Image (cartoon, rainbow, N blue to C red; front, side, top):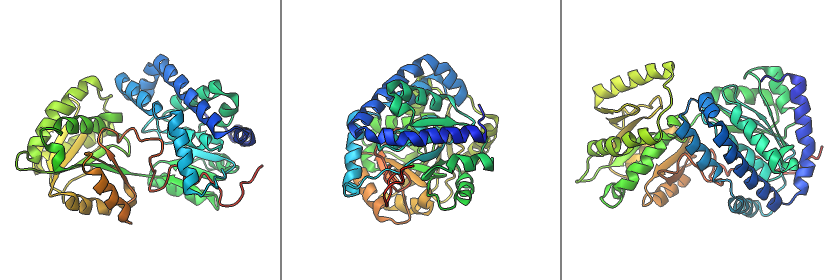
Length: 409
């Protein structure tokens, strides 16, 4: 579908008008409606999983897993806990903006869930521009919201048009108090140049890593490490900004990084290829994958399976992979080494997956490093962020509250 400027303006005005009605409900009511909508959407996915697979390029098992795990985070208790966090952080002065315009990317089809649910929870109506690559899931989410409660559903609507069409983009944002944009740094910069004084909530290019401390490789924990890391690498076919492309491994006398690579391939990524198969490999990615694997084989060790490859590289020469389950393991002496390697990533670092014993230290180091905005979480959970997980160095509600009284149009 493609919407013209008059259609976009009409939908924006309708969504904006629903803000007063939405905010008249209590946050408990909105949390209940949203949880109910998530349950409705989960049932709808079962009926349309084939269409979603075709639209996203992900296998049917992967679509099922992604939908189930993402929608499972939209629970009433989690939303009310998030609301309490926001009230505590703002001193109780939670004054929602009048409307948010949201521009989606198409690489991770479940990304609209947090981007839409959190504003609606706080009483902020949302006009969404879907990616031209994937409109099915956002439309299903809109329909589920409407089935849950008309007041909730009418406070979110969807438009679609080709990116870069300035007149339509101007119409998309003209009634918004803030604009959230998911996409490349080029997309973010272009949108920022057109917004003028309207605040931009930027979710640009990002990369993620994993860290395996020595404890993650001992006999008691290595099985969980392999399973968690394999899931993070495989989820969404490693296409998202939360997908680990490099894994820093603290070698032990009993297990070298090469030995761990072998076990990761044979015990993790190999079996995962059967339970969560990779989708078709695009031709453009195939060429990049061939080049990446060729260089990796020349420079070090490369283990190749039907749907994955594991390289063992050196910290200074480690290269970002083309995604699609190609990953590099790098030996480090410990967290100090890993942090030195991460620091140049700056604001592009989104998440660091780690073993439970290493998470507190990593999170402390990340929070004290002003150059980095990423956060630490458990391996196996990188691709299913909690509803209250931070985004780009900010709380998930960043930009949704007014510093001055909200304009009621």
